[in-house]
Length: 99
Image (cartoon, rainbow, N blue to C red; front, top):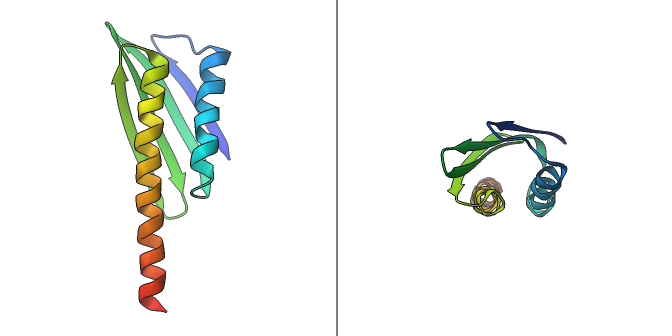
């Protein structure tokens, strides 16, 4: 899986990069992720984490805002996790519907 992590108006530290990758490990248990792009932004006093995951047959996006960058990453990862699970449930439902 190829991962791209970039920053807009904020320097992405090794700790931030490691934190995003740590959150992805949980998501990988639920689905086969082919690649992902993550942008960490700073706008005035808000920290924004945006993520896009590319799965087999779907692209999943999530954005989260918080006063703390790590909290924003947590919120984004939770949103992505819910969407990945929902996508997986749809795939399972389709397979059972055909068989």
